[in-house]
Length: 531
Image 1: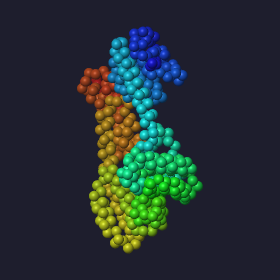
Image 2 (image 1 turned 135 degrees about the horizontal axis):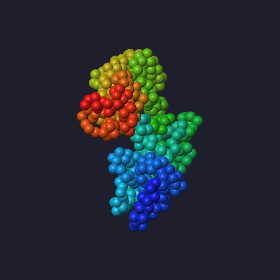
Image 3 (image 1 turned 45 degrees about the horizontal axis):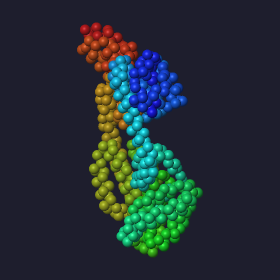
Image 4 (image 1 turned 30 degrees about the vertical axis):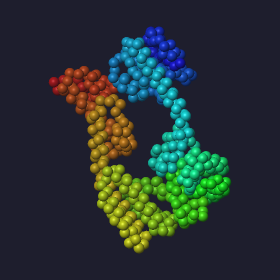
């Protein structure tokens, strides 16, 4: 049975709704009758309800503001607002904050009954879906970890952070690793034993892995058709200690399953220190497994052995790359040179082979080109210069020559960015002016709304607009509204109240004050002067 709250400062109105609705037929009951928005809010702290039917016009806390607070606390509650006035602004605000429906007085009780019935049906549907959502939680958790293996860096954080919070997954650890268990003879086993028996054997390995992984702080195992992907999380004293423990567990799992007929190979990925870089550990585990072709007598393959040394596949650092891009944007040539020098030193210390230095640098340039592309900057000549050089990489005799070329590329990107930035700023300002002209009638138009439209931060937009247009966004909104008001005053017989509403002013007094401040005369005097 649905619980209903009626809210109205008019006792007769509340009594009319209470007595003229067949609550039993709706499988509902009125559990609360309140005569103010504040008392309704207080009651909700004690007892929850399913549906609120409330008047809008109330002295202490009106229906719109009350609904906004209630929906913030409980987005699933259904609210039907009632008003004695046919005000489109009320309906628009109600829809904006998520109110279920909005009706006008005098109340048509049959119509209201249908609205309540619809709200009840929606509640039932949402509750059903919520149960389904809870039942699907294990699948959602598995989907989260599968995506964690397939996304990396900022992309992973962007896609998965909200899901991690919703699923209440506590995954903050010092080190992370992915180890892949691959069934080498999966096809043969399915053919000889049948799929069902093969899957039983795979579950046997699954259980063995889970049992051995109890020693780790956190683990998650994903079962596939011919492999199992193990994600490990640990607060070890060091990465090496974590890796040694993984090797010990891998050896134990091989030993426990050596007589079950399954040919099992294990690829141990790199240790990474950021949850959102687990993808790189997964890639390196897969890469390590490729080396079973060269060493058929082995079962366990470590990515360090695959590369000959511990070459981390973890990205150089999103933060470091962003730092270089920031320096390019600032045209700080001296700092750019220092960055490239530090970058070269780190690469040459970490990688003792040209190929790895070239690949790492190529990844960096890819990030730079992506940044320029996102700003709609023409990069064809820059791409051709990079492609031409990479087709003749071994023409570089020294690392100094190679990193000098990298410096040239960054300088060229800097000049491209500088020439296009002014165009971008002008276009952005034109878009803002156009948006203001189209939306000045909205009395809630403000810097934050315009910044959302422009997809930039409010502080950045405010400073950029003032610098380029030599006037603030607030003054531009006011000027646009005053100009529109002048048009109405010259060419219409609308009242000052009507004009103020059409020009985006919350009340006539503020409109008159603003107009006089801008034009030096009141709106009425301006109209008389024109006439």
